[in-house]
Length: 343
Image (cartoon, rainbow, N blue to C red; front, side):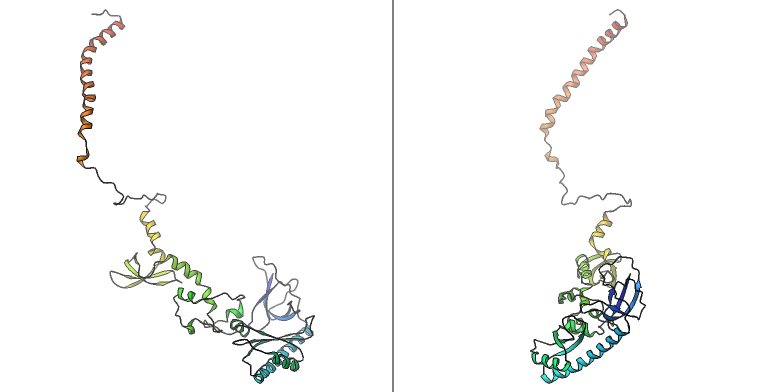
């Protein structure tokens, strides 16, 4: 069985093995982490799945009253730490932006630990800021600089598509995205059109790029003359999601959308060579370039014909003479065999 939990409202989902526990949607459960068990909300009740999934962390059970009180105190401490950190950053006049605060109180090596995630355009000397934060929060301080994509993941938001950011919901690893992917997908090379909330190229450009690569490798290029069921024409555009090709017909000049399989040469060659019988083997017709030239009458040699005349005529004459002489002999031989006297 598998269940899903989230540490924040509409936050990232984490999958657990419920074990013997059966929490319902909205219940608070304990999730094992590197810093100890933390309280999370069950957003997907335990369900049986068709495939066996191994390696999931085991749920530590339903959160009690003490766990809920501790979680509420930590939330208040994180909010206070954010206010103090922003105030000290303004006092030190540092080009930093606080992205997130994490409060840890169950680690074995430290009593209380405050982790401050910040973003900055370049490296920042924050040694004095750390001392002031440790004095104000009375805890051990760690400052971690994150990139633009990690900043969007921690803060969350809505993307240009109207959905929650991929990095804040299901995307775990950031894959490299290049402008070449936007060119292959015929997207406008406008930074405002192909950039996400983080200011970098949208991660969703990576999702459909293999589909566009496969389509461009097999479909005819723009400007290619093709044959369609509606007539001959020229390719003027592509429509990858519908797997069609936009063709301008030569006869009427109008545009029509044809399936990629109807204009590709491999299918046309197959249909041209096939017959009505499904199992018929295609026959390759000789082309005029391969056809051998016909022999001319002057090539025939009369000498070869004259040399063969004695061999053909002499046996015929000898056979006629022998046939007249051998008839009485054969007749006498037959009569002799039958017992009649020879004449």
